[in-house]
Length: 353
Image 1 (cartoon, rainbow, N blue to C red):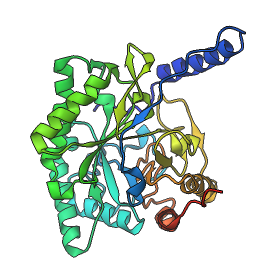
Image 2 (tube, helix red, strand yellow):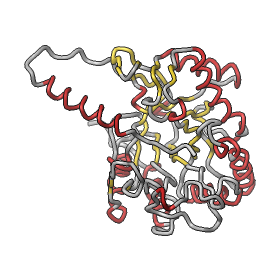
Image 3 (spheres, helix red, strand yellow):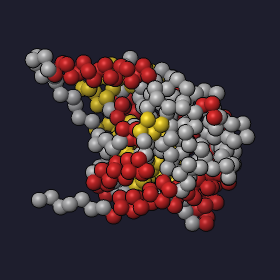
Image 4 (cartoon, one colour):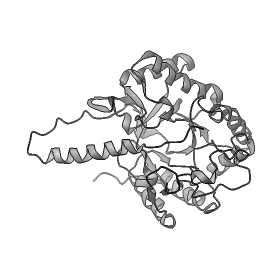
């Protein structure tokens, strides 16, 4: 099975070196660098949105085969044995959606891998059936797309064939989720993009192609939330800061490990992180501090006044960034999240002096 990879060590090394070189460049007495063009978030109605909470939902687990539940792959936290964690189980999906509602979450973002793995596509109708049942009983989070860009595997999104691959994978998600279950902002379905590091090249035409194809197929323009690595056009790892990308909103991945970032129009928070048991990883660890890390960063997110907030993550057990029910923490973080979300919803920024 293809392994989950978040940030390759090589990418981290390049970023670290680039940061050091940047610091040195600013201290050499030479001419000041040309400032980058500003990032472009096109959501004109942002200030009128109801405060909305999203979370990343990993649904690749399968208890019968041990997929993504193998102790040898590193599991610092455990999912409850019942209902049996499985992408084949409607009962399991119902429990996850019910718990998300208890936590105050508005939108589940299934972490989608296109048709590269059977679970990625075959589970979606089961997820939709679970939501349909819960909607009939009351309500459940709506479903947005979190596109895991690792599957793009070096494609050049300035080329027609590679753009088509990108879009066709996205269409495969929306074709499997009923339209009345789509998460939307201003009636526009949400597409959430992970890192850009897994593509060779992209520019604004890559996004325009996605907008045009989606609107032609579904008669609605999508609402694209990009990770900040997509903020500027790039080719072969060289970022052109004079060619900003325009989409509705942006966010920064890494909050579970590194805390709240001011960058991005979407606030991101997480409860902690631990990859020490994952073979071949760098051993990064951010202790939860009995929930204090989560409270501290959630507070910063609330104080930012941002109207959209994403929690990293609902149930990524390999990296221990979960807020779902676990053997180790029970439902503690579900309860924490509900209280914090309630504060987020009622927060009013102080008036300007």
